[in-house]
Structure formats: structure tokens, C-alpha cells
Length: 393
Image 1 (cartoon, rainbow, N blue to C red):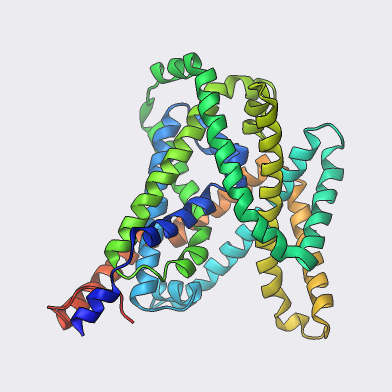
Image 2 (spheres, rainbow, N blue to C red):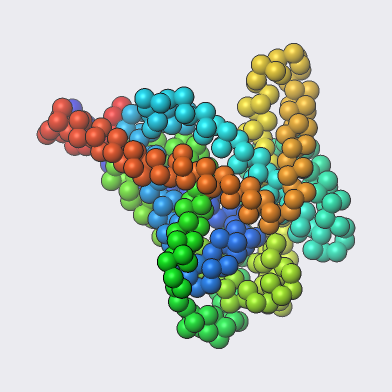
């Protein structure tokens, strides 16, 4: 029996890496690719923002690691059971996560609509408001009729956008290396209040990014031991840190220019345009647009599917009509939010959700979660002192 457990607990590095890759793609998606998030939470702090970015990724991956361990060790079925276990004996507190999660979903859809609309309006073909309704119409049609197709395309577009982004990062940093060196040379932490702001921004960023927990625990059941979960999150930390630090460094080097030009909504697009590499500019434009659309449709598709099965929709018999009504209601809220603009959604929508995430996800998992996971494992070891420590089945 013990030999069988040891054998079953062994998985290849490829499987461990695949879980880390999911966390990376969830973080470094369409929203990340615009550069708006990095600018607001890290670039605005100067070179100190690099330290804040690293701390954010430490908090983020540690939180996800504890969530994975808690879910797999107890063989929990979904995120509802996960948070009930975390908050026990105050199980009902789980509904706060539900509110946080659905608020983040609506904000995320609003943000991708705003991002895609900003991208279209940057071509000067149409203004922002008409672009919002154009993008929303695309979302609505795809959510009702073609979500599966666009979701399949999203994986390809995600790879394309990441490749183009790293090319932009390398070339962008090289093109403004003297400016970046000057920023680094002037680096200093001024007073305790500045350090406090850096730490707070790291927590806020980790707080709203933790909306990925339901996705991560659903794909992490392949990890059989605590050690495998740790290895996977170390890989995820390295991958996310490299991408985030490169983005922050490049945007730091170009910040005086895109801020003066009023291009803080899509700063990476501004950099790409000013590198004067035509094929890279259009490559990035097309990939970013499709990536934003696919991200929004995949989020909205899951949200509509869940909303369509609620009791309030039972009176509508035909499933297609139910989906249309659900999609229209969700899109109505998302369009309203998108009218605020991408920058305000990221600053206020993500920001306030980040504060909630600190209180109900990051701090609980890194305190109570760590304690409960260690206690659970110690109790398991005391029951089977000679067996290998694998996740309970």
C-alpha cells in the first residue's frame, strides 16, 4: 500500500510546469499586455516599483500554493468548499468571496471591453463610445453563438501576444537604456511612508489577482504532494517575475514620454508604435485585440452559463432565449462599467477588490491557511508515521 502511494505520488516535471503555466497565462493575459496594470501599481512608484512587483508575486504564488494544498489534501470539490474549510467554523463567510469573485468578473469584462475599445479608438477610425458598443456587440454574439470557437483561438493568441510582448520588452528596454540607467541611479526609498505604500500596492495587486484561485484549484488536482505544489509555484513565481519585471523596467524607461503624450491607458501600444517596427506594431495590435476579446468572452461565457441556471431564469423555457437574456443583462452591467475607461476600472474596480482580496484571501491563506494545512499534515503523519506524505484521497 505504501509503495503504491509513493508510486502514485510521482509525476513528471512537465505536469508540474503545466500548472505553473496556467497561473502565468492567467496573470499575463490581455489586461497585463496593455501595460495599464503595471503602470498604475508599480511604474508610478519609480524603480522602487520593481521591489513591489517582486513582493506581489511572492504573496500571489504563496497564496495560490496554500489554496492548492488545502484543496488537494482534503479532496475538496470546488472553491466553495475550499473557502468554507478556510473560514471554518465561520463557514458562511464564504459568501463574501462569492461577492468579491462576481464583482471581479464584471470588472474584468468591463476592463477588456474598455481595453479593446481603446485599442480601436487609437486608430482614429471611430471614437471610444461607439467602439465600446461595437466590442460589446461582438462579445454578445460570440457569447451566445460562438464562444467555444473564440476560446479555442485564445490559447494560440495568448502565445502570440506573449511572444510579441517579450520582443517589445527587449527592444523597448534597449531603445531607452540610458533613461532606464538614470532611473536606477536615482533610486532611493524616501521614508517609511513610501515603503508602506510599496507593500500596500503589492498586497492589493496580489489581492485582485487572487480571483484566479477557482481556476487554479480546478487544474491543480494533478499535483499529488505538498512538495509538487511548492515546486509548481516556484516555477510560476520565476515566470511571472521575469515577465512583470521586464514590463515594469521597459515602462519605467518610457514613462516620461507616454505620460506626457497622455497615453497611459495603453502604454505598451505607445512604446510599440514608437519603436517604428511596422510588422511588430500590427502583430501586437491584432494579437492584443483577439486576446482581449477571447478573455472577455471566456469570462462572460462562464458567468452567463451559471446565471442561466438560476431560479430567476426558470420561467424561460428555451435555453437559447435564456442565454440571450442572461448575456444582455451581464453585458448591460459590463458596458456601464466600461464607460469609466480602462484606467479607472483598474484603479478603482481592481483596487477596491484588491483590498477585499487582502482581507478575505491573501492574509487568511497566509495565516490561518498555513496553520490549518500544517496541522492537517501533522495529524496525517501521526496516523501513518512510516508512509510517504501524499495528498489524502
